[in-house]
Length: 390
Image (cartoon, rainbow, N blue to C red; front, side):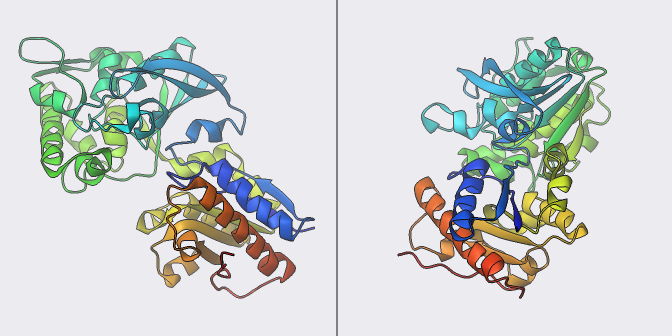
């Protein structure tokens, strides 16, 4: 009986990782019903991180905190004994913006700090902050303030919310915030390697995705630059070095704030693969199906599909990939995957935001995959068979 592990990330804007896995499994089992299929919904630190953790030994707990625009947001955190995982996207993410209206200059990360307070009150010794998918570009200022940091104007009043609030910053004191996390192992799970500032920084690269126009990007980057300088003036000697560190620009600068509090950057993909015991599941699989919304240059830097493929290669297990779109060359994909299928090659319709269409295409992909690689026992390293909508 052939054994298949289906282990995708989400298709952003369309399907959760769990829904992707179910759709592919439906297709495989329709064509090859005796196949032993194992589904593993993955995450890399963005949306779906709590759900992924809770497929393992973690349990969800609900918290109500401040959302990105100041309105209350109810979100789940994942708890396993003294370890708590907080998903930034669930608290200050683009997906929780009221009516979907972006607030690139004023969105705040204050709710993240409140969720950390919740974890600390429960006796957490390890806090995993899953970074990705946020609506904020405030350098983690809101997080720091909610943990007791002083970020004040010249008159002593607290600066306003968001990156724009940092333009008024005159005085900084991180003492109380750092004390709050003393002795806690703060893990910053992300696969983003951007620094905080500059052309490759968080405002320039991710600000437009959060609604920032060109002038907004310049204002945000200038405000974050001023933030770093004020930290240096306040005696935070590693402030500039941390701003240049890979991952500081993750989640609108939450990576930077986390590092100021003693946190350590860790690959989100590898964290979740280890957490969910992927190596054991790989050892029991004849082949693997993985994927994400877009296979592109960022994928090659170690995002989930490639991180999984590397682990599978060590065990001699071939990996097939499916994506909403693929911007990689055949040579690039062949280095990691036995076959690759993009949903955009299967339809003239836009499936990026059409969950029903994406699910149908994934099911048809699963059927074709089974017909070729299970029933047909295909061996050549070539792209997966193209499907035709009927």
